[in-house]
Length: 478
Image (cartoon, rainbow, N blue to C red):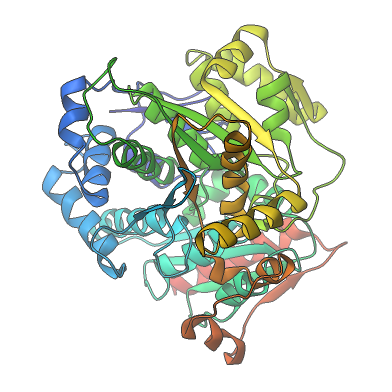
């Protein structure tokens, strides 16, 4: 397997180079040059696999044996999941009214991002140890990505990490999970801006090829293909565990997989799984930051005037960069078309999705949006019907399920992705009139020392970020 970019400037790129990259030099995102199509026999075989085994099988399809042997992949994935409290790593909760909830939040920071992040960290360390090299990771976060990335590399000598988070726009616990990590290789900035705004200086640094090369900059956001690759496993696991018997394609019934969507990394992984031959219908659900919904429904890929703060802060995103990957996939990998679209979007803040591309998206994706009132109502309903506490992001997805049940559309096999534990979002739980459950590890954050710097409005965030990276490089080269 080799890689290309969504805008076409590079091809025949190795997995290792993709792993150690952020945005591609042409401003696009890396993608595999082809999507392997699975035979029905393979689906039947995979149906009995555990979640870790599915991750191994998928990684083996997208990483050439010349770069990593199958035995090495297996060892790295085993090491990645060794910190998870249960062998299966994820769990399917079967609740009332046909509600299947895939719990993806058993990692150390209680978010689905721990799954892919732990695997990517192992892959990074493997390649770095072979070359005795150091890298600096740049991460912009709307909430969960930052703490997950920090935990995956904290204390690792070969990796420094710089995280930017929007001050006051994450949950209190999300902030504490980042700012209480006191490690020499962890550098945190609280930014007076939105998640989209803090992405701007990061994107500018990655656009400076000389700077990226000289300071060995990489990303652990979902612009990194390796994270999307691991997340493909969510959809295979969801499919296999929603059906009693997998009989193969085309006889297998569709399973509807509902995904709460922010930066669109998860829904990109689902789109790839779909193109690999998995018979799923994808439903992408957003909060009032609804650019993904408007794009799918109307072909209207345009920025709103502001990013709205919601009860589901991790998906308060107006510029979901992974949509570029989805456009590329549904365009038939037409890089020239995508380059033109994205350059127009960057210039004007809007672009109309071409009719043919839009029709293909509509055929494969269903979308909807929810309000904060919908989120709290869903949290209350799920608690009253099941005594099951939802995080607000998971409630975004499950709102779609309840809407379908209330309309009588409950015959389809449906799985909703639960992307975080309710433990992390006490404010939303209280807003819904429910009682949060606070585990000891989260309660302990209240009294822990914090360390972070600030980026204030009016300051040159790009220059501050450059200076931090330069200081790290000078220190590690000393």
